[in-house]
Amino acid sequence: DVKVTQSSRYLVKRTGEKVFLECVQDMDHENMFWYRQDPGLGLRLIYFSYDVKMKEKGDIPEGYSVSREKKERFSLILESASTNQTSMYLCASRGGKAGKAYNEQFFGPGTRLTVL
Amino acid sequence: GQNIDQPTEMTATEGAIVQINCTYQTSGFNGLFWYQQHAGEAPTFLSYNVLDGLEEKGRFSSFLSRSKGYSYLLLKELQMKDSASYLCAVRGTYNFNKFYFGSGTKLNVKP
Image 1 (cartoon, rainbow over the protein chains, first blue to last red):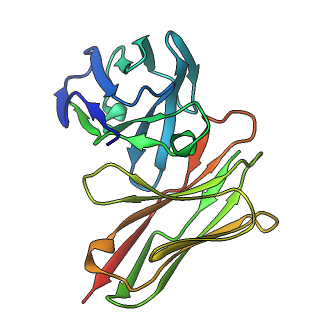
Image 2 (cartoon, rainbow over the protein chains, first blue to last red):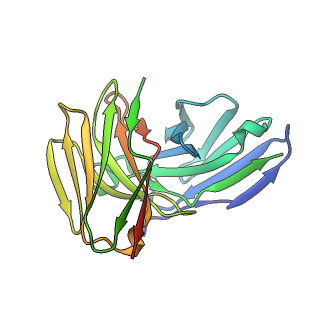
């Protein structure tokens, strides 16, 4: 069973704090993603990675950075948290080779981050 | 820009059929996806269309018309557990990792 796990379900941080969100997948997938989900706006892509140490900006990368030191782990970093980064953060992974996993994205349960 | 439109909310009765529409205007197209997301849970993959026509998978079917920029998800024999949000997403042409999501349709199934 494909599994994507995220380090926390709920997180409360203060403005200006550095925040780390961790994501781990156990399917040996090449591609990993970070989205944020806000009411009325749908899922918006922050960053994605197609290989270890490789990353590309998504549609809303400002205020975020990422790290992928190992294939199974993809971290999202909020350098200095702000209240407008209060959101649900979803991690996902996708296989890189032809087959069922190539088209599907498998999502983690999400981290609801509140920045006070 | 990328534009994916779907209705915000729909209500249907248990045992009935419901159709959730999605229209898109994107700079490229390499597949349309439907995901189901129960409240407080992760989205799960339902279907993938890249060619025109209907794809059937049990009680769920998905249709695509590329010339019209249109898709729908058809749910038959509705069950209470089908109450969820349904997300439409389009994958871009030039980067297989770029997915553009609509804001989702919340489906309420009533007895």
